[in-house]
Length: 503
Ligand code: ATP
Ligand code: MG
Image 1 (cartoon, rainbow, N blue to C red):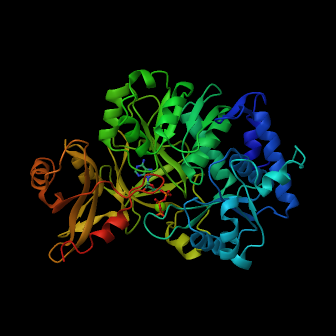
Image 2 (image 1 turned 120 degrees about the horizontal axis):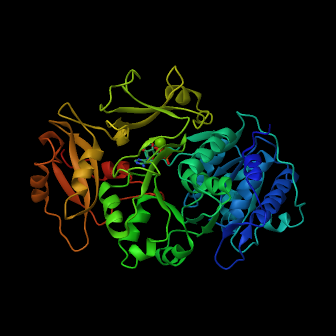
């Protein structure tokens, strides 16, 4: 059997005339269009000399052709390597040196700079753009509309995705066809995707969430998607009536809640809202239910593993929790030092095993070895615990754990307590160097619109909910918290900004 993900995608097409992609200003594109255009791109890749296993690095905006090109890469057996369009040429150069792509694809506007920055390291650079005038788009028209999808074995790579770089330099995660196939199948099942679904797609497609979770799930269920270039509140409100489901990062949901047009009527026809990539605060979860009657389904995953846990489709979607292990995946809470499983309720490192787990970090064998236990479990680096009903809750990243006066303080617990206070919009809790405590628990917050944050009042209010050692020594107010494109709070940036606060 051909283990290429595209073979499974193709087999799931019940009727090529069914709609696949709705984009503004274009006719609806069908599954038949998808088959044809992806075949043309696969032929083009072969004609450019891209062989199975070659890396193809892509730094473009979110176009329709970027989807066709991703699928063309799958079919040609190339290893798809998407890059955030916000990366500078110098950053792209780091990834190109690391991954040695046989082909780099960019926007026409960045061709000249990229060519001079990358120099001789990359033999071929081509372009794609929204208008269809890129070099690949000109060549692809003359290519045949059929292609025999390249055979992939269980270990063959479909993609290398660089992690978001939240805790340090991004690492290239090697992802196989089987990782993607198994995960997309279980999401279709777990979230009850079917051909009648229309997914509102406003996520970027250089990251696991928008690329794999969203698009692969749509394709394996025969659903369609409304493909928006980005999350623009007016465009999202306009598209919502035609959608049945939406996947978003937590900031999508806070932005929807900040808009008065988003009310019960606007969401009444929707089947499902999914959140992930960063913690969804229990406050936002509850606010969303109060406004719309819908409980957001929060799930947890990472670049290295695709999706790991999910709240249930049927049953309670618990605010602040990330739910249960997906089918076929084993999740355990272990002692960070030894990897020994911990009793229910104790906080430890989240470790996982299953067909979703990547095959290692690209050209980092030592790093790869460090992140796996001898029995094959992958150490996620996230801390968490299981409650008596089996729901997993994330307590923060191991790297963000604060040790203050010898006590462990889990940032998520303090953030939840802060978010529940009337005056606070969002919060990030970090540890900063402190002469007496080693690290001092410090909160950086934003004020809720129309409110002001009173530092000593906040600390007073926390006394009734948190043990004294967990209460932030300082509560600092900013207009906004630094976030990346996936809505992840950049705690490294905050630690740097306030490094000298207590010294
Ligand atoms: P890097 O590994 O380079 O530091 P990163 O871990 O942010 O960056 P990603 O792979 O994009 O890169 O993100 C995975 C991480 O996102 C998880 O390890 C977890 O910390 C966080 N995450 C994802 N979903 C959730 C969620 N529902 N709740 C809390 N955290 C989440
Ligand atoms: Mg990570």
